[in-house]
Length: 584
Image 1: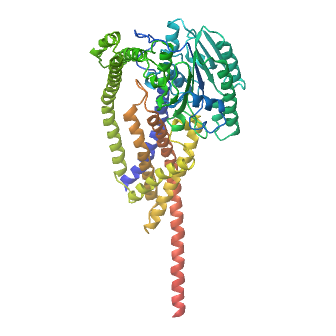
Image 2 (image 1 turned 180 degrees about the vertical axis):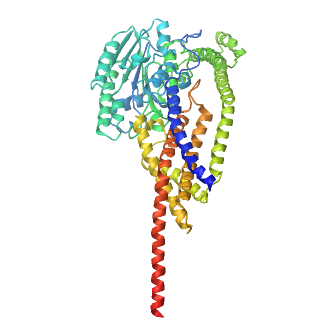
Image 3 (image 1 turned 90 degrees about the vertical axis):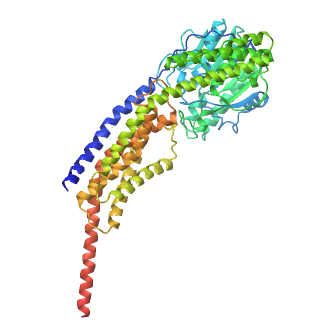
């Protein structure tokens, strides 16, 4: 009995200790995700051969917030006509699907691990000028003039002198897109500008509150009319028009995660150098190298995309030149990145053969060899990443396993008489939490988090209801045993429910620690893993807090019901005795 009394004090203290430690761990994790920068700088351009130009000018239109899921049935005749007459496909963005990393991916061809822009930008408030090389810098090196118009957040990440012309407006302004369109109209008349980037915000603002609204449909129509104006301005015999998006939205609004409707985006290309048709899905990071191939510039140094040559009308010689340039860029990237993360990389020996093949007129051989070199460089990067991850995860696995064994041993040590019932009740707690989460139609994705404090409050409510349900199940199971348990025994069993529930939620914490670590360091983790890691920390913390408060209430409820039940039984016995005596 003495050991159980000690456990009755020990468990709440440990639970509260866990609850107090978690906020610091969570803040450290979030801060490291917000501050993430790639291990190598990619501002310096690699020495590569630029392929021949295919277009005099490229106009890149970014329709922020436009998912490929929610526009095809809308009233957008201009966009649909461009889609039907040009080259079309869907592109998949690599999350986190926030605007700054998406913009850098569109202009730099980068994956999140190489994007020197704020990645975990939940509040859309982080500011940091990116050092990542982009197609803008590549065009400037050839004395090509570049112009950008759109959301003023562009000014937060782009170097001030990266573009010859800029025009940035508050996205919240009602006429922001009209101002962008007016500025683009002036640039179209300037033949010295080779690349125009126009980013429109109206659809994004409307989609934030849901796509089944009149506001969203109105936004689509307004943007479509502006696209019609743009199409009429452009000479598509000397200009390539590319229309795409940075990210989409959930049907109810929200972005940031890896939800299909958030990461699946339209891509439409029309004009000079384009081969019309419907093509296989591509990646968002493929757009920057495609622009490089059209303008005849080098590829951005951190580019991990592949130019969409199947959508371009290229001669065999020009196609081979593009692949040769890409192979040179990718080998340079692999050498830079692998060295930065502590690995070693030996450039492929057959790289030297590329120019010879090309000079000999063996364009097919040049392209095939370049594709092989690109795949080898990409594989070398992934192999180096996996090797470092394995070396870092081994000790974290040992730590996570030791913690799990310790907490399981803690609940089994001097376990209560109702330990099995406590385990069942804890399972009910976890199931009820996820059932309620699903009932609210919340996705297991960063897209659900528009405001961290508000999201935490939602989780607290779900956890409170789930823990309460678990305690009720324990009380019912105890009553079904038809035994009399003391208030102390019920308290101890209630704390065991909390402990087991913490273990249930905590397994995800330990998994996150194993896969990511205590902080985001040299590589940005999968956003699904990061979301689960963050939310499981909240789950453990508030389960511990609420699970310390509810057991005394549950034990009191059990004692009260038990008392009423015994009184009822006593009355039945007394009545039966009285009836027996009366019959006698």
